[in-house]
Image 1 (cartoon, rainbow, N blue to C red):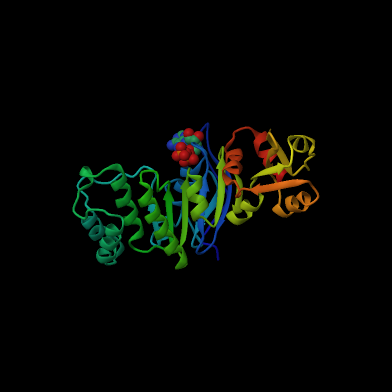
Image 2: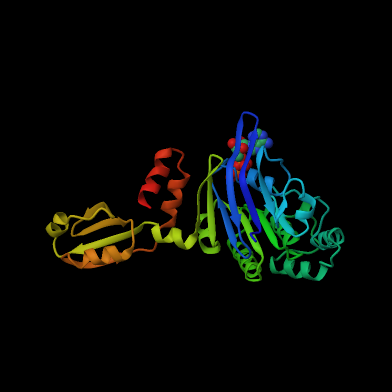
Length: 305
Ligand SMILES: Nc1ncnc2c1ncn2[C@@H]1O[C@H](COP(=O)(O)OP(=O)(O)OP(=O)(O)O)[C@@H](O)[C@H]1O
C-alpha cells in the first residue's frame, strides 16, 4: 500500500488560487521531491497533508487515513518541519527531546542528543540565542528523533550551510534505506537530483510533471561538441532533428542532444567527425522549462518527450 495518496486535491483561498487537482502517490521507502517556483502551491499541499487546511474538494490520505478527519492519528507516525520554523525562545535541544518524548510517550533523550551532535547543535543553547540555521536544525532533529515512518519537510535546507545539507541528506538516505518515506519540497535542483528517487513539479497550483528521476535523466538534453577536420566541413554538416544546433566556432559545432545517445553515435559513425564530446544529462534545463509560466514552455517539453 502507498504511504501517501492524494486524489483530485483542491484548495482555493476565495478568489486566490491555492492548488487544483493534485494527484500524488508516494510509496514506502521513497525519497520524493516536490518542486515548484514561488507561490506554486507546495506549502498549501503540505498543509493539506498535515491536516492544517481542509480541502475545498478531493482527498488526501496518509497510511490509509484521511489527512483532515483523521489528522491526529496520522501525525503519530509522522515527522514534520514547516517552511517558516517557529519555536519557543526558551527552548533548548535538551528540553525539546524531553518535551517531545513526553508527548509521544517515547524516550527520545539519547537518540535526540546523538542527532543533535550529528547536526553540531549545542544541547543547552536556547532558541533566542540561536542563528536561523541552528533553529532550522533544532526543528529537524525534533522531527527526526522518533524515527517516523514518514517525514514531511517544507524546504528543509533553506537555512542550512552545505555541510549541514549533506548531513541532512545522509540522515534522510539512511531513513529511506530502513523503509521510511521522505516527502520534501525544495527550490534547489541539485539537491533533488542527488537525493530523490522521484520528483513532482507543481506550477500554478497544478502538477506538471511526476516522474522517476532516472527516467527524467534519460530525456534531459545533453551538450554535444562535434569537431571536424576543417571549418568548412563543420559548416556543411547537416544535423538530424534530435540534435539542436547552438553555435559553430571554427571547426566545432555545439549542439544539444534531445534523445538517446545511441542515436547520436549511430549518426556520428556516418559523418567525417574527428572528435565528439557528450556532456551529462542537463536536468536543470529541463526543470527550468517546467518552471516557465507560459503554456508554450510546457508544450515544448511535451513535444520533446
Ligand atoms: N492563507 C492564504 N490566503 C490566500 N492565499 C494564499 C494563502 N496561502 C497561500 N496562498 C496563495 O496560494 C498560492 C500557493 O501558495 P503556497 O504558499 O502554497 O506556494 P509555495 O509553492 O509554497 O511558494 P514558496 O516557494 O514561495 O514558499 C499562492 O498564489 C499564494 O498566494
